[in-house]
Image (cartoon, rainbow, N blue to C red; front, side, top):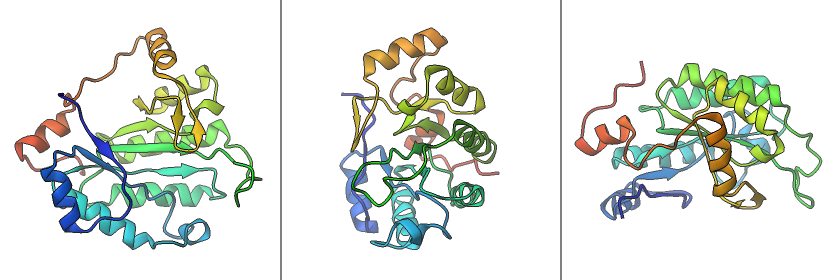
Length: 212
């Protein structure tokens, strides 16, 4: 079908990652979510190193990695910097760095968290763009809390992709037709499947060159 295939299935062993590669998987999403220091405050089912081991297994199998974080968990500026530091120090920078904004949901432990300030996501995106110069930075879940003008400012700060679709797991999002119209107003066009230079290099077996 000529499509890139990305999935998220939780923790993986090297053998499982290799099986996915052989099945034709293009990319694997496995977010670090936040800094190593703040991580135990929000996640207890697996360790930070568990997540890094899965990412390493995926990279070793030759699958592109999509790994970012969630802003608005109650983290500090230092934690957001820590997340970017961890990702930028991976053996190979991820092909994609999704930036999610927490949408507090009633009945969950974070239901009373304050909405993410726009300047916070702007600063995070701008910092990530400097640290990850060739990585695709995606506006992901929660972007609908921002106006179109605010989302456009995120692109000016360094974002260059969005996750689209009417629902992102547990939170609503914008549908494709709405997003396509928005991008048309901005004068932007979508990238075709396998158009990314890094994906093309990976398919040819060329070594990564984006880290330094």
